[in-house]
Figure 1 (cartoon, rainbow, N blue to C red):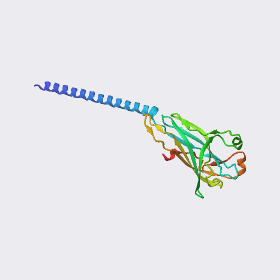
Figure 2: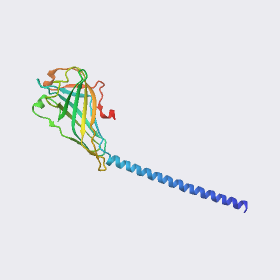
Figure 3: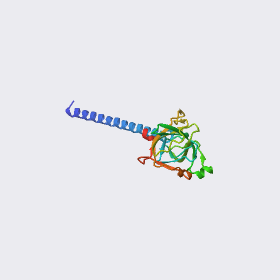
Figure 4: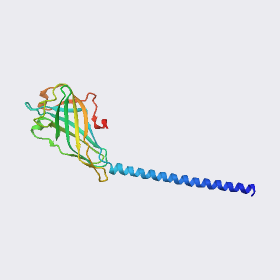
Length: 229
């Protein structure tokens, strides 16, 4: 076999190898792109339709307090609460509870979400508030309401937990309804809690004749359950 013929054979073999490599890498690239497209489509489906309700709660820097009735343990705390659902599935908050602790005495008093509205004695006398009911949120939605928390009952002590000027510790707990993960599988609800501190800047019982006393965050920042996520 001549050197020329051997050279031609070697050239043909190189071309065949190169062509096969091109087809192999081209096919691999197409396969990878197809796999990425499938993964992206699956993620989009999960994120837009199947993702379970993901509820977040936010408490503003200022809340409101009143102890309008003498010779009773009734106290009112008004908190404008924002609830956001970052999931695709709908979610529902069944009820809310509030625990208030005086860090000086270590005593804790319990409250429940009783009504919606902005507190005033005039509105209380005319029963102008709306009773609290479970809050339902569609996927990718939010809602803000002023929630009025009342003392749970006559057995709650002390008679008045908020009176001394200074900081108080709060724990807001929201209880969600049983949910679904989008595939028909039930999920046990996990309570959502927001712990925060608010300061009573002054105390004057005359303020309760018409309204409330505000309580503010030391750092003037909003509080949320995302801080502990």
